[in-house]
Length: 167
Image (cartoon, rainbow, N blue to C red; front, side, top):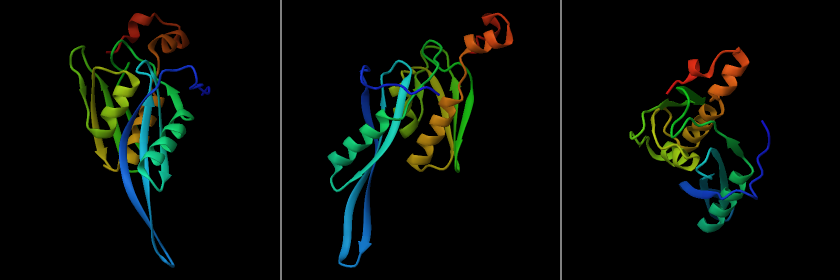
């Protein structure tokens, strides 16, 4: 995969979850915050990152910086995904299914945030297994990474593109 430079892109960020974390040390408990953030330009480029700090705004800022280093390009077909795919990470599974125009984003929590950041307006999703936001986000990204562009597949198979209009 090629590295996508975030400097020229108009990226919008969205916080998925903020978690309060305590570390027990000799003198008591150290309190910090962990933030899971997704960034995207709503035109097929999206990334996620996690940041930890003593204060929430700093954790979010670190998460955004990490997300900008972890960008992927997602092939879109109009306002939906090109074909059905299931992403798996750990015990989390996320199914992404193309939907006709006007359906909207039928997704819950973390998956909805990612779909909006990517720029998908019509999709049906189902999160199966783990409901941990980190696992759901990573499973969604595995699914998005495994999406294939119909034009590229048609060119590889030396067949007309019309055979691959899957939505």
